[in-house]
Length: 81
Image 1 (cartoon, rainbow, N blue to C red):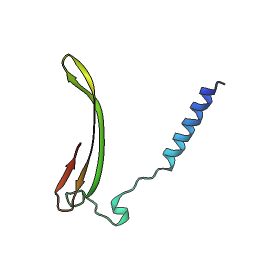
Image 2: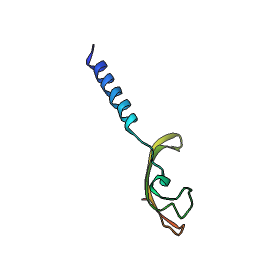
Image 3: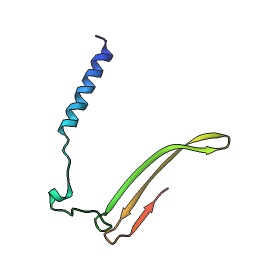
Image 4: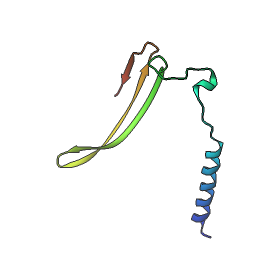
């Protein structure tokens, strides 16, 4: 068997074992709220996105990163460079 085949089997085994070890967590399990609202959305959330933007007559790569900060009052601030 070629090395690439052995690597593929090893990676597949690792990924499948990892997916079996993951457990879903729910807020209600920890004594938290059971529904979502502006009051439960709090903290810092980071995001990143990439794609292409049309600039005539071609497409150019585009990357966007940023963070949103949500307060318990329902207000938010956004930072995007």
